[in-house]
Length: 326
Ligand SMILES: NC(=O)c1ccc[n+]([C@@H]2O[C@H](COP(=O)([O-])OP(=O)(O)OC[C@H]3O[C@@H](n4cnc5c(N)ncnc54)[C@H](OP(=O)(O)O)[C@@H]3O)[C@@H](O)[C@H]2O)c1
Image (cartoon, rainbow, N blue to C red; front, side):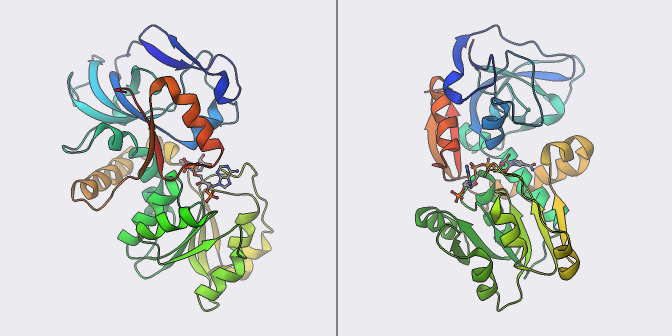
């Protein structure tokens, strides 16, 4: 089978597009004929050795897959060969076949394309867990979303609106902010040209925001936290900016506010029943037309490096997908 292979840590242009042997599932795993695999920021980190997980070489990056079950381990009863599924694995997805733990594999809703399915689990799963389980976002509250047009950011905009919140979206260009408005943002801030803290205060009549969704990090984290409301919750999602921020902790005391960590992959492993309930809710919303993944661009497997470059260069809005059929 064809696969994108990482033989040493480095940049996307060092990845190889080669023939490798098809992997074999153990008794708790399924082998999927991958039809699409979306790109997520952690894919850009894992190939550089900058992610919390460092697989043994050689490995294929790619974690968010949709495809058809080709083989199942002997202990599996809830999935059968031929099922169309979505699944999540820390790596292995940028390949024609991938192994997924059966517990991380779910039936793909009818009517959901393979491309949309591959762009769904990680982004919506992370945002819904963050908003519902970690921030306990309530109807009528105000949320500030940083990197709001990105893969996870845009799903946070959509889900926050669905949960009845008022959304302030922050991003780096007018084009990105226009997309946030299309997805329901009530107010927008260009954080490269406007003062984030002052603008949030203006938009909330000095009160600040109840929740901050932060997949960006760097200098924006403290600026945002200084505009948090009494008893606010600042969700730490990631550090796309490349810099892990340090916040003076006295700010939490002054605002009675919390800094709340979010790690969807660990949540899915530690609390599988709750994670499953969340995924069912998200897939139900998708089936009712309430959620619409935004696919910015599609690449072939051979051009995966280009897709990863686009993400590193901050060019993507919503998701990029690797489509195995093109
Ligand atoms: N905690 C979890 O469970 C979890 C799950 C999934 C992802 N994540 C993390 O969430 C973050 C976002 O992931 P994603 O897949 O949504 O990525 P993405 O699509 O690339 O979005 C990241 C956004 O961050 C902003 N950004 C600011 N500085 C940047 C820089 N130097 N390089 C790239 N982007 C920059 C960009 O928006 P602007 O141009 O508008 O600033 C971009 O849209 C990553 O750190 C990822 O590891 C965490």
